[in-house]
Picture 1 (cartoon, rainbow, N blue to C red):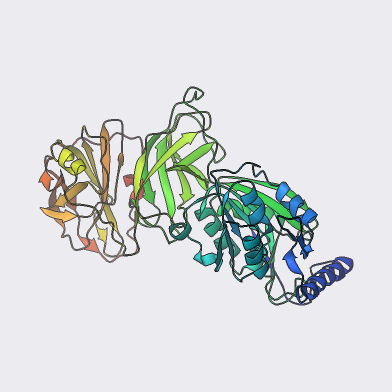
Picture 2: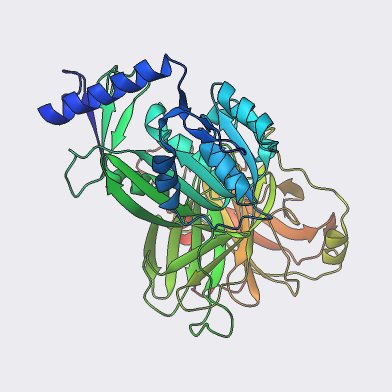
Length: 493
């Protein structure tokens, strides 16, 4: 549990008297110096001349040296968020990186030094919310020094940092030394409680800062240091992966990857959405040994639940800013191989996943034969169905094709096309299709069949719907049965 402490009663009341006076004095001195000709960072030019700043070069070098950034960055892209006068940007360019430097206000000394050093740094004056992978692409390293506590929405800020990090993010921030607790705590400063500055909003503990970096989507996170009310945290978007000849444990059997909102395989990249991943594995697993991969990146595990026997479910957050289109998800257990991939689909902002109507993949699938084995609904055991709760059906079928997805298979109920929510593997040769039953569908028996690319290629099956009743006491099991894993479906005849 994380707690947010609001401190509004007294300026710097979170600090002991000596600390309060020292911090107020430090901030006051820095504000006074910034009103003179001194820059923020001290900068060294190519001829050895120095542009004096309020932070000495020795301190700047000491801070960046605390992070495991290679001395040779040739061929790497680096983003410096909160670049200020540009010391970190110039240092990382000197190591060979292609650097993009971003800050919300222009620093004339950075532009002057960039010209003097004949630097190729791309310098942009914009807010953090304007930093997107669509605009800038992805970066091998992201430097995020001394920015977080100035932002009104710190977790959102870390999610933005994660969305453009293809490798490692180096995060440094002010932290509240006074928040001593086993829980991750963060102090809130409504006005000028921190050092008299109007743009200091938050004071997380080092533990809270580390936890927020994990929550923002970084899969491997470590707090590197904490001292003098500052902390450094490193986060990786790619975790370590065992090689095939080193792996010993068998790969999990991945059945379904669905959206927790509606149980479909369709997501929206700009919303707060979560993955529900159903799989089977013979061993006992927990959140420390599960590995989730989406495309080339790793996702942090939120929870792991045992459903029954060898059936498990793990939850993870959809990464912020994920590009529209298909994405492949795999799961593994520490020391073992990764599973076969399941596809999810991220919809563009128009909220409709577009695909071509006549692809080579669909033409191949249209020649396949589907054998429907059984049909089950969430109201199989009910005499009445709710008039306001969603009802679902599951179709179990056999098909020799291996590349079946929710966008390639089609479901027809009484010859009318119906939307498919999700398709997953029930076993090595059996598939499961999930769909929502339209409320307008009348009570009685209904026929269904499956097809690909406009061609009906399955046998017919039927299911029975009871009458609807507006009774809140009718409790539907819905996906409690539909999302089950590892049980044998009834064979339809």
